[in-house]
Every structure is written in structure tokens, then in C-alpha cells.
Image (cartoon, rainbow, N blue to C red; front, side, top):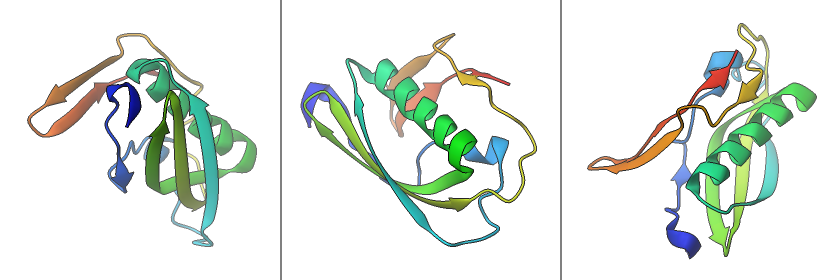
Length: 116
């Protein structure tokens, strides 16, 4: 994997979708594939979460299964999810404000601020 980025796969990825919607109504699974340029971990995280937010807003989808692969400085992601049935809180933007990514004994730990 390039640029020292860790590879993540499975369902333990960011769960911000639970802040802004319920993906458990119609369980007709839909997939999305993304390719996002990444200069560093922070840029990669913000680009990925911003893309999730865009898909949520434009297509009404939330994702609960993810797989990732780095190809040089491009993050390739495959997402699986479903239509959102209800939305209780709107996330307006993903920000770099107070963003931190750090390695811990348990893995990567992230602090991020969303504009709501």
C-alpha cells in the first residue's frame, strides 16, 4: 500500500451515517465505487467523508460495509448500503477543524468535526 496509509476493510468504518439517517429500512443493497486522490491521511479522510455526505444528499443512500485499497495516492473504495428511510439530523459539511488522526494500540483513532 502506498504513502504509508493503512488498508481498511469490513464494517468497522466511520459510522457517521447513523448521525444523519437510518439505513435499515429498505434493505435493497446498492453499491458504489469511489476513486479519490489523497495527498495524506487527513485529506483522504475528509475527501472520503465528504463523498459519503454528497451521496447521502443526492442519492439518499447510507453505507454500512466498506472496502478500501490504495493505488499510489488514489484511494479506491467499494461501499455497500441502502436507501435512508428517515433522517433526524443533517450534517452540512466535513471539516478540517481540530482534525487529528493517530495510531493507538487498538488501531487508528480519529477526531473530526462535522458542521451540523
